[in-house]
Length: 274
Image (cartoon, rainbow, N blue to C red; front, side, top):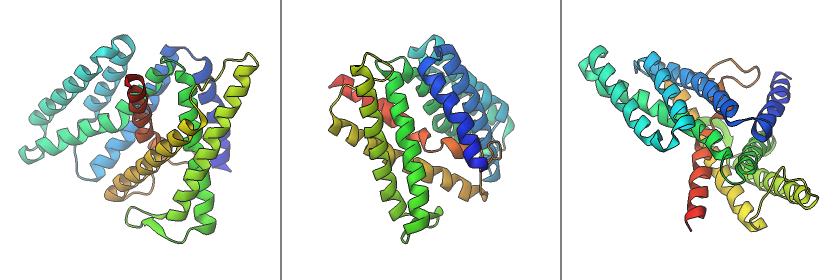
């Protein structure tokens, strides 16, 4: 019940923010989520033996979002500056044998958490960006839900027992089917709305393109889920946090998006290039 109530509250807020929220509000919301998720990641890193300067990592996260909002062309430079800042501070505060591992763990947190979430509001300002972001969310959410129920009812063959014992190949297959069905559903809904003069959602490519995109994003999301499971397994914890009732931590809730978002972003760049 807690899981359902949390979803009922958060999902309409997310949808409204994507469809009608201004860029500054989208960027602010993504930054807050990134800071919370990064904090949870840093706790996992500490439990795994790293000693990342937490305050600096959180400041670097804020820097990335500020640069993405005001000067997105300098985002790569901001990433490089963050890496050098983490290395410099770790050189002064960490034991000699821990300088590189601590700095690397901090910089990985920025790549793993902050960078994908920076892409979400940046995506909405692209052509039909809000439609693409909603497609991503629907595909990932549907795949996650179907995987849960198919895995519980039909799962027999573990996918990665060392990382996530409850994940099965049957659940993974059901997840792909659920993502494709949900992806085609939102594309069909958007097309019908557009034909009736409502340009809330627009999907120009043919149906087979969106099937391929749904499969690609689903695979990325499932791998992203396993990656976070690997981090938690290494830290010896079940959930990354307790902030979201019924869902665990923020990182637990967005782990699939952290890989799916960059995949969508670069797939869009490739399509624009060719």
